[in-house]
Image 1: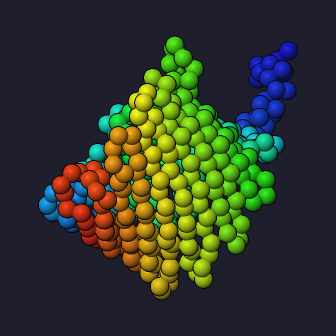
Image 2 (image 1 turned 180 degrees about the vertical axis):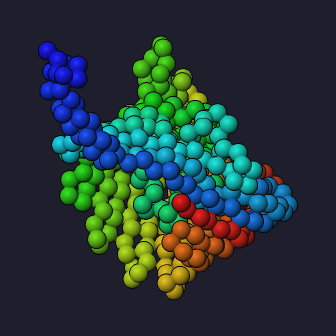
Length: 364
């Protein structure tokens, strides 16, 4: 049946319900959020006994570097409220070299992370390319709070960003580091001030479930008086060799600042008969000198042992003096000194390397 304007009666009855549904849908969209964010960090750096890539070398070098204080990046993250306390989420992040305008990775545009997931009363489950549990554990207890990632021993060795083993451990897509893994599932559940996490990354190999895979567990406590973390992960190569890594650390408030201590390391099978073992002890923290000026200092002792090779390593101290221009912008002065043990990363080179940097960081 139609009314006098020729509109079917069922449409007249249905239209109000349809409009209410659209309004409800619009209300649901209002509960969603998506954010574009980033960090732009660059500075002038001068070194002695170290290359522009912060590797032990001959002579002096001067350069402009990106990410001296904090790694430059561009990211996108968001959530959608699904109702009943359930949220969908996503995360995409690219590392940037703002001194050249290039992305940090030539093979992975979202090299710093690409995942989606669900969050609710059951915990948080994410799937994609993600930080390992070792990387997650280092962040809150590292003396420098992961500043200067390319020189920070906890980032490079404890969290495996630059393990220098020449083999891909886990599905990292790299033979130089395993800080993040492809094809991974991560689950986190918080109870009180404690959060437990488990993570598994698939190797995606047609002939094996274990090749290039990794499995890890971690637990952290975040209270008002102190914070502590403990994490363990085992990684596999495509030939079945293993790397077993761990991170432990505590952070305690000291006045308006903080004091942090870490003890971490890994043991890697580099061949069927050879092993490499690294241990890292880190100590330092952050001390506000004025409301605008912070002093951040970290000292790292690295000891390495290898099959059929002499033990070596290094001691490194890194300090930042940061002046806050605003909540989002700061300028910094950085100084570092490394004393090498024996022929670590270079035979016959000078036993000490130093660096000095002046830069600016802006977050948005």
